[in-house]
Length: 565
Image 1 (tube, rainbow, N blue to C red):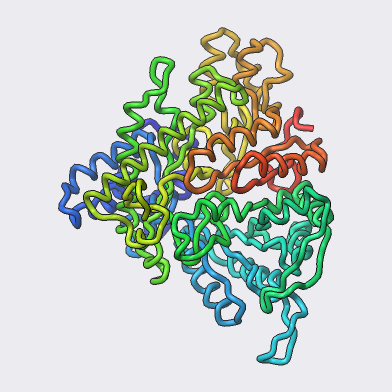
Image 2: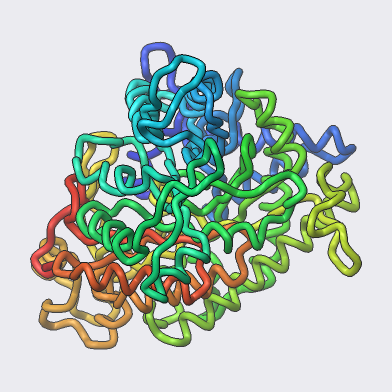
């Protein structure tokens, strides 16, 4: 195995098994063997050769061509081996439901999973509580309780808990929700998003009002000007990066099992819409590994996608579920989410700038291919093992539709630490910077793009002084002595117009079953109008949700560069 120093640091900090005294008791190679062995044992239940698949699974991971979501790597083989990353839990309008869900969320967070909740069913602040004669405290107050509980739960001893909190834009408490995170001490363990139906976007386009609905009664609770609420959304996002927008009607248009209910929430990073008690296992193909002689190696990618889909399907059966209702839902729909990382690296290797029209076209081609092959792999598994149990009544239960093993097969996740292990760019993001420093578990890690180093050496402009300058600035824009075509190729996130970032997200979304995690990065100098334009463009371009982050908008931003203002 070829692992960078940074990869080893991340593995030691978060993934490798530790003994009772905190000492590391396995190597990276042993870690992948542990995961492959644990997951492949499922094959025996289907009369398959588990030893063969164990070796295939191990090969795929050791080569860094594919990695499953973090909980699978951390927990496979442990007594309570919870392997899924994404969960959504229901929050009904009763004290029992609120705290039962909090208990279930604690079990999920402890195991390394991330939880999403919609608080839209909770009655608004100051509403009547007939059972006690009192008044309701509203959804935001209960989010604070969930946040405090998350604070004391260290995920699997390896990472802090992550939550998504969603509120519909027509909830009477929407303005309190929109502004809560302007206080940097509030809801620090939550990403928050507004569920926006098409009717709100229509009211916004007409500069009209829209109706608020009390979820307890289902009746009108007044009206608000759509533009005023949108202005508050934009202001908060400009200041803090929250809230994101979830285009909830669009998400439900692609709900594969509408007979079971409607989507109300997503996982913490927004790429996985799920029904209440549903889970999903994710994995990512490292696209930087599929460039050969200046071309995409599609035959190898196809073969590995089939293996990855099998791995993820086996993971559903190998999983030790923290809550019985989650096991029932996950095994009922068997959702998996195969995505990509190393996209920006692939473009560099193919000599295509990130925001070139050829890059957008390749994005559609690559994701169409992965989507098609993952669906074919699911059909093949269905022939061997049967369709997912909730198949009847699903969108696939119709003439001409494939008989599939999995209700969904593709999702594009952010792959934060996974991409660090694989030493590749994260998800479908552009390069954050050519070189920068970041903190991982209180350890400072210096990230230098290895492809830029290779270019610099090959083209004869490499020097220690140059690398020091690039590390200070982060980008190549104002660095002298670097050819203009190299500067274009290594353009960083803050140098790419938001329109092009959304175009890339839209290109991948076109061929992704679930959703696409993509942060639209804006420079510090970006105006509120830029945030508003980005939101509106995202809606027009057909994405399912959007997160906008203005660099330096809140504490904890990776590093300040000279060229980001």
